[in-house]
Each structure stands twice: as C-alpha cells, then as structure tokens.
Length: 142
Image (cartoon, rainbow, N blue to C red; front, top):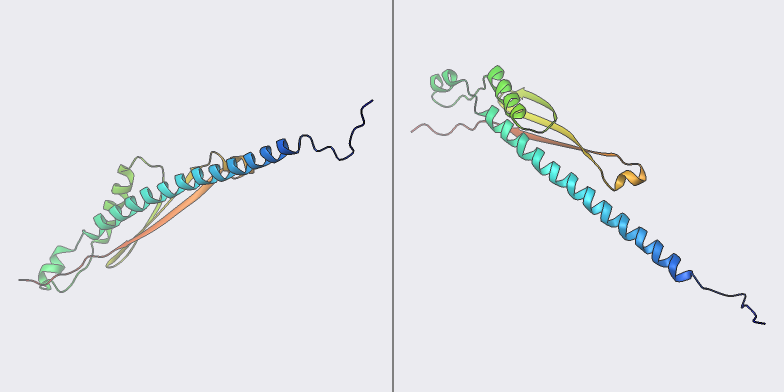
C-alpha cells in the first residue's frame, strides 16, 4: 500500500506556466494593438499636416500684392475646399473638420483602429485623433 502525501504538489508547475503564458500573450497583444494605433496616428498626422499646409497656401493674392506683402489673408472658401479635397484624395476613411480663423487653418482628423488582441478583453476599437495648424508667413518683399 502506498500512502499519498497530503501535500502533493503535482501539477503546480503547469498552472504557473499557463498563467505566465497568458500574461505574455496579453503583453504581446497590447504591444501589437498599441503599435497599430501609433502607426495610424502617424499616418493621420501626416494627412492633417498636408491638408493644413495646402489650405494655408490659398492666399488672397490681391490683398497680399496691394499691401506690399505685409498683409496676409486667406481665401477662406478656397482654403476649405483645398483642405477637404486633400483629405478626400487619401484612401483612409476618416472624419475631419476644417476650421479657418484667418489666417490660421486648423484641421482635425479622427479615425478608429480595430483591435486584434484587446478584443479578447472587450476593447474592440481604439480611437485616434490628431490636429494640425498652419498659417501663411509673409516674407519681406525684395
């Protein structure tokens, strides 16, 4: 007859390994989804910067030349159309807002990143939002 020791610990290492595996999988998932959100933010920032710079190039040229290069005003309607066109030419499905407060152009862009690993804990989507400002700069007239 063999007696079983009441302090038998067989299987304890398996529980520890499974637990550590879940922790490592969670950290890897967070890193992957976080990196995807970071890359999306970078792409959106480039898009917003380009739209703001293109819009800020829409000067009221008549006012600029009549004022001897001292007065810088935007053609607000043209600037808004250029920014919206810039955003629409991108292949990204984004929500954008263009605000013109002469002479500053502000472009806000929002998007979402669907998660792969964070979905397991109930986070299906990460929101990403960026903002860019641009304004024309009057140089000295030679």
